[in-house]
Image (cartoon, rainbow, N blue to C red; front, side):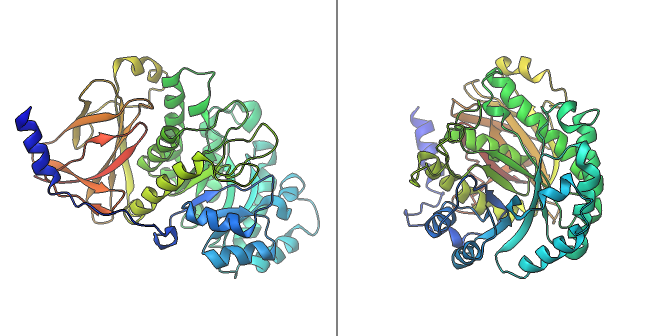
Amino acid sequence: MRKITTLFLALTALIPTLSAKKVNMAEQPFFPIYGHNMLWLIDEEMVKDQVDMGLTMITIYGDQQELDWCEKYGMKTIIYRHNGIDKYIYNSGEADMEQNLINMVNTYKDHPTFYAFQVTDEPSKRVYDNYAKVYKTLKTTAPKIPIYTNFFPSWSQPNQHGFTDYEEYVETFCKLFAGDKKSQPFIYDNYCNKDLRLKPAERLASFLENLDTVERITSKYGLDFWVTVLSSQHDHYPEPTAADLDFQVFTSLAYGAKGIGYFITNSHQNLNFQGGPFNFLGDKTPTYYNLRELNFRVRQLAPVLEKLKFQGAYYSLIMKDKAAFKKYPMHKALPGKLVKSVVSDRGNCSFLVTELKDDKGDVWIFVVNLSLENIAHFTPTLVEGKTLQHFNSYTGQLFPKTYVDPWLRPGQGKLYKVVDK
């Protein structure tokens, strides 16, 4: 025990220790981290608080006052569907559609805070033709502006999305977006990780299956994807814990997501939307502080994340999780190309391990603790001559190669660079 303690102290002496300081989130790099404001109108103080929470983009109705507040605090905006685009999805035969859409684009496109238009939510095959007309009109008028559309999750049924299966649904819209791949992400939401009707491990496996499917199809068409995750109570889904938030965000980033959204960022007097970052009184809730700390880590990772391209996902599962994951055969077990194994030292945690490559050809590894209850300490085994170098998401720096930092909180993920020993 004394030898282990001495070794630990020697290693930690090499790790930089920073004094606590007040963090100005606006100084952190931009990464699409968007919050859905709905059911009430935001005010200037809430814009400021959402900037401080680490969001880089929020949905707004599009009033001039809202735009001015967002410009003042450096927040990007998604113009919410209150703008009336939705009506053309369900009735594109209106004679004034094209001119009205062009006028709307011209109203916002030069404003410094404007980032995207929200067109509709969860479109089905029934509205595909109308959606395509609206999409093409907007893209012709402003080719570089993303069209924000939130698509169905993988647990949706044909009677909802209208296609033979979910893969056909995703692929159909990806084909439409393929010509605009530099400016158009595929965006979807999935809250099944909080679906209490499923067994705990199955909730996680279903969430991960959706990531696997969307990554595979979007990469086929050269598209980025964003994931909208749960940040409040909604329907039968309870409000998320810190571990739930970490799990949703870090698994999404591990699969190569280039944007993270939160539904929703406020609470409502209606019992269907509670426990968001702000309660109905406008006060900050515990979720606010959990998201602030999480968003800070994401934005410290942002300079690396934007350069990473997903190469493959692998799993190291303990016995109690294997049965649930058997329903989703796309979950491959380790070894990967460079990582032979990742083992929980106490045998109490499963892991997601993804391999990613940057624009210089260097390989990075994301390791996510899939336990939402247990702290993980893991031992990695790589191919001969390679080791992991931890990229710290609090400092935004690589740690010395002599310390891997194998500790993961419940649901937490960490990024590592593969380097020579």
